[in-house]
Image: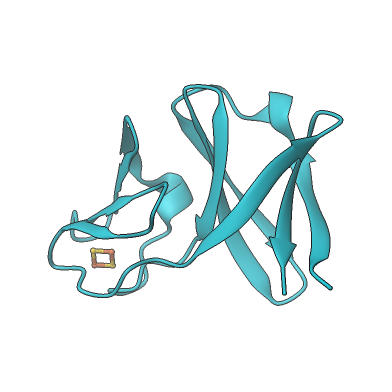
Length: 103
Ligand code: FES
């Protein structure tokens, strides 16, 4: 059964912004892309960069450490030096709360 984890209020994150949420063992970046919510791991796959503190342009986030880029929706690398995709989580909004589903 997938587990639902409540992360934050959707209203906390303005469009084009992200926040960092820590829950259990997870450190996550929660993004609002034009009113749609997406969740990825916060820690860049390339090093110590925090993606919730990165620069967001549409559905791309640029790491503030070495300027690598990921697609927020798919986790795919858009720009090196990152090589490994960022993990993404199935995300829903329930009663105004951003919730992820994990196995
Ligand atoms: S730590 Fe993110 S691009 Fe290097």
